[in-house]
Length: 431
Image (tube, rainbow, N blue to C red; front, side, top):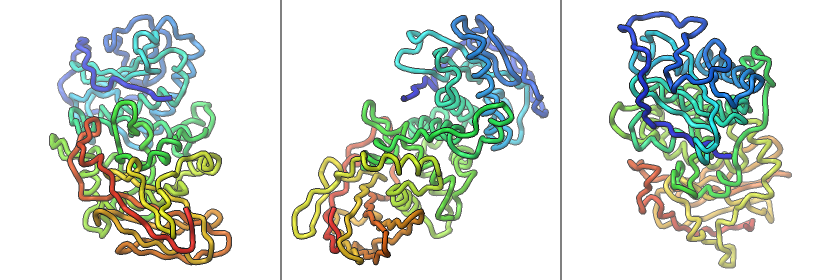
């Protein structure tokens, strides 16, 4: 299910007036502020949240509050995200000032937010967010934690009103939801709230692998991948290749070290964070896609989903021209920072590839899997070769990795949607 949001919708609701800035320590229990979002029909509250709405049962409210408190503990307290309980108009990171307000959650009719399970709204005068949730989803972490991800992101402020970051907001919110649901990150916080430890990953493999040729983050209405593209964030956070500059704080670094008011893309920010350690953005994207050949991104539940679903995934990227030569299908040629993943059927122990492309701006890799281990062999200057051990399998991955471009994912220029055309001569295997 997709969870649509009205993230930047300004609501001109008069909030409690904010006091003069002062440094303070966050209280254990935040202050109620029913004026944010209207405050009608109070149901229940916890230390950091309040639930409203006549259609919300006390049982669902209690469950929803447990989920939200666990998310607050995990992301705000343990991981250091800025709490949505603070106005964006008060002190920034390390200079927080109160008051701290409980986030309001409103149970609303489906007709109030058509096509959505929930939405994040903003009181622009107060600089505070509130949620609207269809009551049947108020105890669904895939919905409410996704929205909480939006609220934390908004509270961090730096990406607000930067159109080239726009589609990435959904990517980040689903990344936050998946972290909460299916990884070890929030297990302790959930246990403290009496909630189950881990569930299945929300990864949508039929989209992220089946349409891997699309622009890395594509916000095109009806066909984009911006809800599904979050495994890239998982990769750079888990950093299985130990690249300098990446790791567990990288997403917050991308937000907090964004060049203010620049309207740059998140990839430009990430490129700066890589620094001069010898790894550039093109190598990062190329290796991400190589690891997605077997979902080897440091995410156990996502890898389990791949193992269960891989036979149903669409890998029809190449046309067979005979004699071991293949050409990329025009409709599936990899676009800006997208890729083709091509599983090969080895006929011998040595597999060799020779790529001829319309441009040199690509990163190709042979991913070799044996048991639980995957190794990666770079294709250099169009040529690559691997010798397979018993039981190993191999995939060819071709990523389109040109120089970084400033683009709006909701309005992708035609040249970025023009795929890389290439052919490949394969020896020792077939597609």
